[in-house]
Length: 354
View 1 (cartoon, helix red, strand yellow):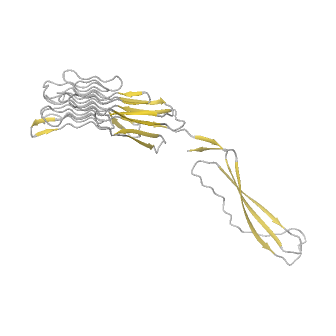
View 2: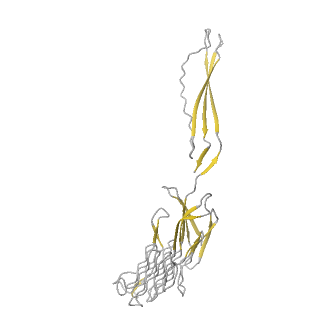
View 3: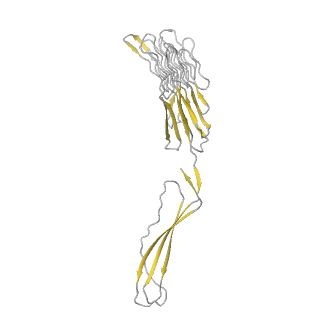
């Protein structure tokens, strides 16, 4: 297992985005990594989602991981320990998802199906699990056919549905997750797992938007559907298994941490910098006559290129060209004149490094 850190830059506004996900197996607790902000960063937009709860063994969809989003969190350079919570799994007992932790914040793991409390509550029988205030909602309960239908797990954006909402033996939908634009794209996280249902004549116990798994259904030993797991990196709750057959309950999805921040410009003072670049052009001038006065008329046609400097960063450049003509006019002798082209540039005393 390992935490994967994916760092990108928003091409529109220049925000930097760091996304932390984990390959940790369901039921594996937490996976962690050390990470630091660049120098000068003091505020960040952060999102944490806990691991989703497992779907119940016929007792309701898994609750989504808790959802925590802070838009202007005060931060230090670090290093910071980032902990990603794994999804829960059924191993003879219903297991909640694990907590996700970073920057002093905690997003609680989702409650397992079977009425367990968590970041969002798991679906249950006569009593559903509760969610943590501000992080998720309760699960749904079974309907009029307890052995054939169950409620959906709670999501970060709403409660799981009770069973029978979509028919007498229908499973409840998982609660919806919440949308965030922290990555620059609106994405849903922390959807609840769907409840089980008994036959194909009623609606499926769909998972909530944001990674919730779909509940299983059963008609006979040859005609059934397994539940699906919660989505990793979204903290979705697992779908509920039908007791009559099919695979074991499916796991909740692992959590995630996403950080968005601006790196302030860094200024360095170099003082004023001057550089003289000289080029000498010698042109012979010969006369057979005496020059009475030190005066020479001439027309010179030189193509003098404008000095040009390319910088990839933002510099202020000041460029000038100077001419210095020297003439030796003592007659009667060969007269030479020399033209010097001086290219002068000056870097401003402050410039921005990006």
